[in-house]
Amino acid sequence: MKLTLLGTGGSAGLPQIGGPDGKGDWGKTDPGEPRNRRTRASAALTLDDSRVILIDTAPELRLQLTACGIRRVDAVLYTHAHADHVAGLDDIRILNRLLNAPMPGFATAPVWEELQARFAYAFLPYDGKFFIRPVIVPHDLTPGGRTEIAGAEMLVFEQDHGFSTSLGLRVGRLAYCTDVVRLSEAALGALAGLDLLVVDCFTTRDHPTHAGLPTVLGWVERLAPKRTVLTHLGPDMDYATLKRTLPAGIEPGYDGMELPL
Image (cartoon, rainbow, N blue to C red; front, side, top):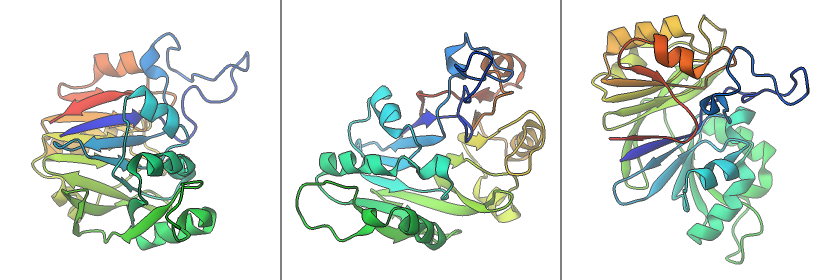
């Protein structure tokens, strides 16, 4: 099994629009370090038999999949309905063609309600012809419950995202927890005994909707995963600085990073 971090940036990506010459605002990061160039957060879980579960459809999805050599997706899971995690939904059209079938989708009922309001055409019945639009078949997820997606048994749990909620997920001894500011006791219980924790860490300090580094360090101290990789990194999270200063066992993620188990 392998998790590929397709995108590791915050909602504005990096560089953000702007900058002194209009070619991008890099914040406190080094523009000369290619691992600081970040698209919006999404990931792909490749199972042992090469089936792929796509986690969120970031705005740069086409570029992410082609850059990482992912030729086919068997199912998509949405952690929540914020634009930086869903705006690439139209690219599912090409994934439909490659799969030659409607795309099985997995999310909570409130997320489906939002996506159906914004992308109604993607949920119309499939006519069996050439895919001229994305076609998704929605399946409801219940936080705290186990489900099977593309043959993988998965535990999904609710996360506090400040003014909203998101889903964290665990497959075996791997967990992916983006867009979270607080974890309940139930969520922390679901994260015990991990080999790999991929977790939101937007800033070096606390933030209203995303975990900051002090919070993440507290989670790692309690959970003691063998390896922790930070994602959803903001403009003050320089790759080289983090790599140099983080405690052993914790490292910054980057676009295209492959994490085998």
